[in-house]
Length: 185
Image (cartoon, rainbow, N blue to C red; front, side):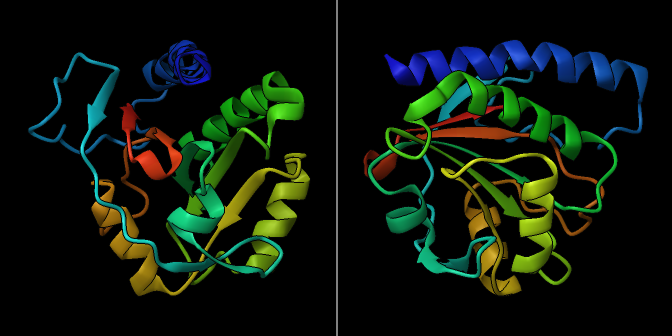
């Protein structure tokens, strides 16, 4: 039930993102839709095998992406870079709305995860400053790591782009270790 609610919250937030894209055509020109998705479908269940690689959170704490940062909880996962001035701040705003709606469930039943696509620039200290700026609460992790590890995760999630300025704004909902992934474009 909580999974469905979380998906509905993100789908309603798509309206805000699509309106912003209509007003700013350069807002992260979307990559082609993968073959396993319908272009007109805002959410799709996808079969992903995401590696459980070591990353760092905004506090510099090491952990494995799937087993520790996501764990057995329901998770909303997106990716960003802190110098972005277009779609990434909108995704941060959507996550802030979700954070507020989750209340005490944040960090217990549900975790929010934002993975940097610019790990060379977005070191833990920079992610911590970004998290403080947008008033992220405990239970919302901002992750970075070795570029090779981050790229492997992004490739497994089918969102890797050579050009960080040209990535599709995407959110994933995953049910922890069960591995049921829903992509929200």
